[in-house]
Image 1 (cartoon, rainbow, N blue to C red):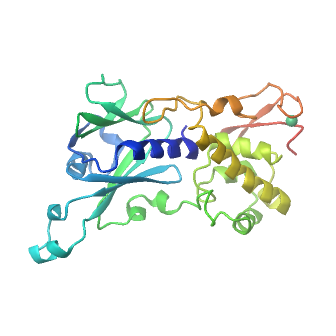
Image 2 (spheres, protein in one colour):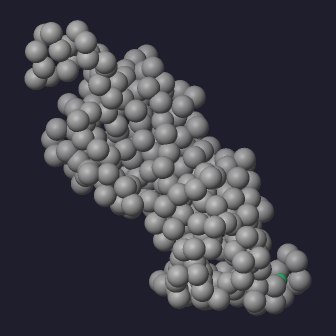
Image 3 (cartoon, rainbow, N blue to C red):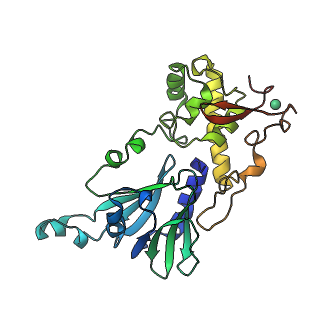
Length: 295
Ligand SMILES: [Zn+2]
């Protein structure tokens, strides 16, 4: 499942190819990919808009779109001349298997292609999604992102932001009796961390996934916060992971997989102490850890 580093890798890849490109049209192949507006309105809503830039919030990708002022509807002529170009957003969540691929229109369609958007010079942005959990929204200029996508409005701080401070994390964790692994997966605590990086960060900070949040010491919380930041930064630096079939917008695979400490290494020796790594189910997810290093 794409986590923050993979989504950030996709964002950077898209920003190398799409800024300034005008959406000429498209084709919707699976209605349920569109969460807002009605599927039948989606392609028409985006057609004619220019892609300004891609942003990321948690695991959401947000494309800022601009329409020519003259394309605004429902406004009088006097207002039109003064109105700035209106900004709307195309928001994409890749969920488990979603991929955005920047391809030539002549490229044969993959079986699980769900949405196609056409750009000048026969270029195309394709959304391919095997498991079909991926979603996208179009948020018109007069609407708030959080109104249309409530979970986006409830996201916790970005791990690289000042808001993800030691004080913030200590306050939140000391008020919770949940296992720390469960808390790390809660997108309202910190945005973008998923199963892979939660396991890796807990190993690096030597904390057992089952440890109750309110029993963590301040030094442990400090170490955990830094480990979350470090493990995400490192993975962004190498272009995402190879734990899944993740591909960047050019269809290339990242290479973080060779450097995993615990994730996916059940039964293999710990790279620090040699103990066989263990795995347990916690809140419905697999947790990988070293029974010796993590206490
Ligand atoms: Zn160990």
